[in-house]
Image (cartoon, rainbow over all chains, first blue to last red):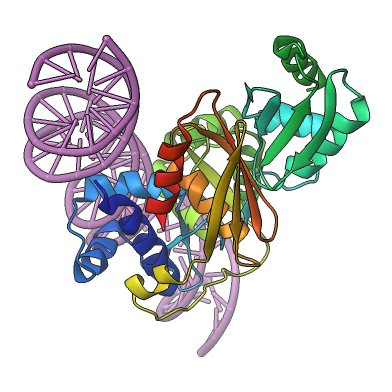
Length: 154
Length: 154
DNA sequence: AAAAAATAAGGATAAATATTCAAACTCATT
DNA sequence: AATGAGTTTGAATATTTATCCTTATTTTTT
């Protein structure tokens, strides 16, 4: 419904404002805010928000938002190429003369650096955010060729 | 008994070396490593290690290790509705298949995060600076629809 | 060395969470 | 309108995970 965006915002706020250890508790809070939904829907919302459930210092479980989360997947800093192998390049898509590469959070800029270093033909330049890289291609550049080059880099 | 420490190390290595989505899977891996234990024990181990289960970008669930320190917990007591007014969207313009959103300084990245989370159709990726977000749209995407979706989000 | 306390673990089960399935709804297009 | 593709949801259920209860083992204290 149209409530969904509001509800997701509400969930984020609830989770970050106090320690909550189960979906039922979140449901209670949402109800107070005027959102009625079932646990099934909440479970899906949490998945979409990438909320994690972790053990807290008090011996309880607590839901945490990805921003607050200081979780990372690998303990050592690996070179980009290796990282792409283990963690997987999430995907590359094209639209017009722009390519979009999705990466794991935090890895975009180092990956973009590697791409720049490779001097792949047809790629004029790259811009990286946190988990997304934009590739600007020459007009009429063959996208499949570029895709293959990027993938070869992995 | 004195294996416990070894086992905890093994769990950390397993979790950080590949994407694992359930305790049973971890049990399989541990078994290959020569550790025999039950799910009950593993559950306690994970709690002790403060391992969290979170949704990954691939639509699966994944266990992740905590970074060194505590959880950050932003304590905002504002009511939900009020907090949602404070997001500073200034304007949206399009050029070709690129959209440009101007925000109040500092708001771009969190707003881009929200846009990403919503999985709005036609938007294949975003990159945020401090007060600007670039949206890359699918070829031929209906710009007014996208504009409405973004505005609905706020 | 024995008693007491603490830790570790499994089996069984409770509790919590994810998913399946079907229904209701929204839009874009014909 | 009508169609169809894509979302969103709840009810029921399957799956997963945490905990209760008990026993065994180690560690500490007397």
